[in-house]
Each structure stands twice: as C-alpha cells, then as structure tokens.
Length: 387
View (cartoon, helix red, strand yellow):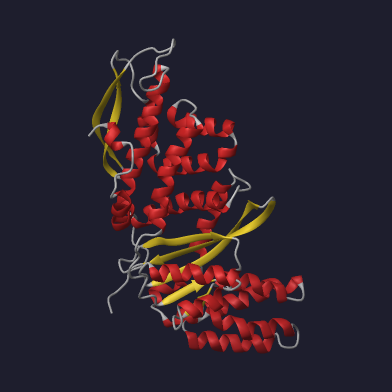
C-alpha cells in the first residue's frame, strides 16, 4: 500500500472502529504518525510535492512499509524515502515512545489553535518542525472523526453504572460560561471498567442529564443493576425518567462532605464524621439503620438541622448493602470518577478557557479514550458472578 492510499481514512474505517472499539486505536496511530513523517520529509527537502524551490535539497522517493511492535500490537507504517538517502523520520520514534499520549498532544494542539506559537511548540515535539494551519486542520479532522466514532460506539451489558459531572470554562457569545461535562463509566460482565460516554453542554441540568442517559440506552446499554452518583442537580429526575426502577446509591463520600454544612459548631465536626462512618461501615443494612436511628436521636436536641438532614439523606447511601459484600467498597462512592476528574483538570489547564464547546469535548474525549483503553486492557476491577 502506498502512502497516497493510506493517508486518508478508509471508507469503512469509522464503521470498523465502531465495531471493534479500542481495537481500532492502532489505525489512528498509524494515520497520524504517517502524516507527521510526511510533514517532516517535506521540511527536510525544503519543498512540497512537485514544488521547485531554490532551497530544495533532494527528491522524494516514495514510501517503504515497516511493521513495528507497539503496546497496541503490530502497526504497519509507510516510511517516507528520499532518493539521495540520509533521511529517516524522527517522528516515528517519538510517536512510538508515546503512542497513547500522541492523541492527547494533537487534541491539545487543536484546542490551542488560536495561538500559532503554541501550536508550533507542541507539534515540534513530534515532527521536529512547525506545521501550517492547513496541516493542523488535516491531522485534527482525522482525530475528530475517530473520537466521534468512539463516543458513538455500541455498549452492551453494563452491571454497575457510575455517573459524575465537572465544569470547565467555555467562551460563548463573548462571555465566559461554565460548561457541564457529564461522564459515565461502568463495569461490564467481564468485571472490567470502561468509559461509556461523555457529553459537554451549556444546557439546563435536567435536560442535559436526560439526553445523556438516553444516548447511553440508545447505544445499547442494558442490564444495569445499580447507579452510583452524587446528588447532582437534575440527575434524579433524569435518572428516574430514563432508568426507572434501577436502584440508586448516593455517593457516601459526598454525603460525608454535605453533612458538614449542618454541623453547628466546628468542634463537633470530627465526632459527626466518625458517627457517619460508623453507619456506612456497618456489617449489614439492618445494623446501619439501627446506628442511623441512634445518631438522629443523639443530635435531635444539640443539632436539630443536622439530625433532620441525616434522617432524610443518609438512607440514600445505604442501597449498597443489597449487593454482594465483595463489591460494596467499590460501589458506595464515585471516587474512581473523581480521580478521572482530577486528571481531566490537569490536562485542561493547557486551555484554561476553551474557545467553544467542541474544543472542550475534543480534549476530554481524548483523555477518556486513553483512560478507557488502560482499564480495558488492565486487570479485573470486580469479579462478576453469573446469575
């Protein structure tokens, strides 16, 4: 296969990626590294294809196929050749050293597209040279198609579903606004975690959550036995509308944090926190409910608002007791997604304020696609026994 045959996405590429999921990631690496090598040869020669310039220092001589072993499996690259010899693309070596980070680099490059200086600095790490805006658009349009296909891939059976949200600054109509990033991850029948989907929007909370959950169902998500999340605005209404009948576990970590708002004196905080942990760490639900009744009575006179809040809200954190003992520790909080949120925050600092929703979606998608690949090729998260 020549590079000319390989430099654009094949007609069935998106269909193939949709069917194979992350198994299609090597194709992304192949296409993007091939493009980087082509740009590097053009810079080396000092001229583009069929271009005559005084500074031209050689002639292109086609491509040579090379199969390279990577962490993603064997990938076939088209190595650009120069007739006079002496050229070998450094982009191949650099790209293979960080094949998963390559996708993030290009996503960040696109987000920072408003700054030519920043684009040049990032692409130089990969290609050894700055690139034109046309070349940036070419590479990132390939990336967009792959990320879009990943977000739309079929899902299948999901035993446990985790939901969370975070916010990023996005510029819209001359104003800086908070865009909600909704994230869903799940544990499948094989016991491994995977990122199921994400959505970025400035829309109303309940409308956004409802559309997001409906999209997961439309993509084939089925068999959900438990939803774990915090008490996000609009989520309760959306969850009941789309996943009615599925039990809900309110994140115990966030419940513990919420309780502090109702503690009348700072000196009581440690005692209240220990009492709530006693409830959550009970051996079974009956014991937890007994502890809860004791705590409600204990604080009825000295902290009446706290007592009323505990009676109304803490039962939402006890649903997990109905599930297998060996699963409970990993079902009672959204801490796993909180760690993902921190990673997103670390990477989105490069943008600070996104120019639009699409640029935010692009970078977060690249981060989550990389995370999901690590989870799905890693060890089992929960041992799921057949019914």
